[in-house]
Image 1 (cartoon, rainbow, N blue to C red):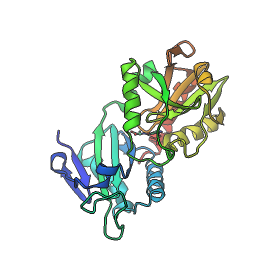
Image 2 (cartoon, rainbow, N blue to C red):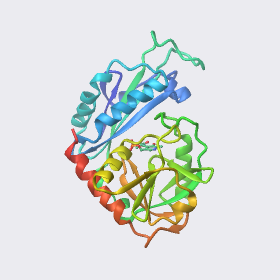
Image 3 (cartoon, protein in one colour):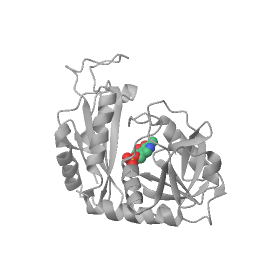
Length: 287
Ligand code: PDD
């Protein structure tokens, strides 16, 4: 099926959508993005994604596009036009193009940001086989830049890390820096020890996950103990269980870290319970 996508105010067939070869998103990775999941045709955590998008734009001094206040309508329109039931909506905003390549930013008075949105259909997204078996992950050095709290499209290293995981016969990679885990290639990382949920504190070192915020809130509401601090590679391998969170994976149990099986090698009870709570609660507030 040919998707209908959104480019700078127009809904177009994906084959007819075009942006400039001088667009700074293309030439400089000068762009930010968001991924919002869709379950049963409804948007999950939409307000959180828009809030983080606004922050990412602000941190990079990219001006808000004219359609910013209409983003909910655009998302809903894409869901409707593509009959999207389960899947994701990808949104990218770049600094735009002033018709040439230059390291300095173009004048924001005369250069409009580029806005692109498209849907990705993933039937049965909330019921993935990986969520039942649990993910096997490897650890790789985190060599990304220092502002990982800004959701930029500089995703080459996370892609390479994911390929390293695939080459090793695993599902994903967690990134480490000076012996501690920062986050996953495209998710936030957690371990569970003695019933306590441990995940790295917010800073410039990790993305402030929208799913993370919701999951930690639900965990605290369910009287689970949460510790927001860095954890070491050794702690991760000795954990009772582990999991990661993201808009597309929700709460994903991790059963193996760098060849070490956690617990009995099957998804742990805390991860399974949090996945249930997250899906139930976020479906209730989906819009
Ligand atoms: N990735 N950390 C990184 C590096 C991420 O890329 C993501 C999301 C997360 C989780 O954030 P959230 O819960 O807001 O999705 C953490 C998206 C899903 C992606 O790139 O496809």
